[in-house]
Length: 480
Image (tube, rainbow, N blue to C red; front, side, top):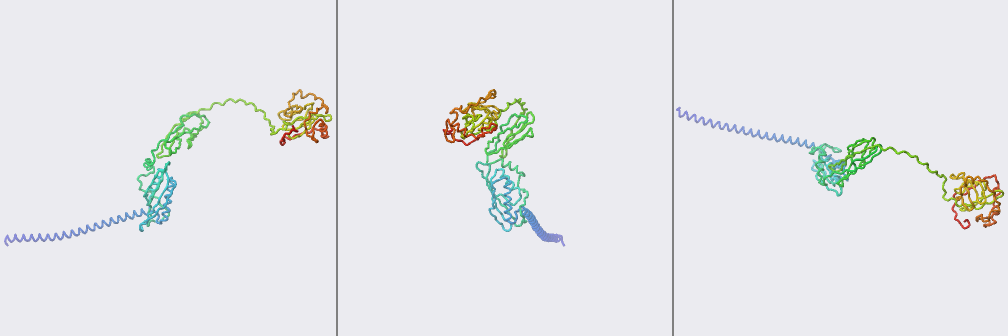
């Protein structure tokens, strides 16, 4: 074989080898690419399956959480329990005129039932914020879908209306009440943070102003004597209510009531300092303070006691509404046998008393005993407390109240002789009714005829008493 043939054969062989290798490599490459595609497809399917499993696990976990937060699956029980829970939150927040009413329900297949509630109440801005905070801090399947707040005229309260939606999952575990768990939905942890950020920028009222305190300053007190000081507070906000506080006290016995009245009984002399504050009920509350400085001194020494004069004697005898003694006159003095006799005429009762020496009598406010019968007068010894033991003289025609007290020397004189009966003048007797209804010079014999026999006895000392308070008898011409 020539070199030319040998070269040609080599070239042909190389070409055949190249073509063979190309076919072989194409087949191999195709098989590898196919397998690689299958691997990629299976790997993608595996990833999808894993993702589906992960999502399913997440959904199952979330569903489990939803079931734990869900209202009871029994819709009637869920409605009653949630309604009671809302009323409790309204009461805790301090709102008044609370009304919670179910306003409908909407089922979604066999998964859950959505129930809607309407809440109405009246309260202050900070109370509404507390209510919303209490609703959202509990991890339940509920939400506030609508809020309506309206100011009330001439009041610090607001009219609130809420609309809430709550879910009951069919797959939730049966329960008789709601399960309250802390929620993770709130950004701020404390209620005070929301109060400061929301209520502090009240869009329904002007900014809160500081109340003013007065009536304190420097005061004086005395040891062991009660001290009372009234603090006065004024607030530019007419709807605010102020409260007093004793924030600094120099004595534990000092007291300050809700009306600002400071009361204290100091025990030692000295200077004492107190600090009183007044706080309004707005939000945030504004406070004003003022110092009270009390200078306590000892009381002055008591004045020297001056003996008081003895009280005047008190007449224990009762005063009569109508005193017969004023209207009882000495009408006549006569002699009966060896004795003298006086006639006392009680005009109001038309009663004639005949008395002898030694006889006691009581007419109205006058009490006494006849001691002496003279020509135109008689003397009696008084038994009244004021004039007890004294001798009083009554003349003819005088009443018992006109009696005059006799001097001691005159009272012990020897009595004069009693004139005979015929010495009594005819005009010494007043017109006294007789059995015949006449009066005149012959009246003496008629009077003597009326005397009982025992009146002439000298040993007996009878007591004659006129009625103290007789019925009032009008005067007539005859009694006068």
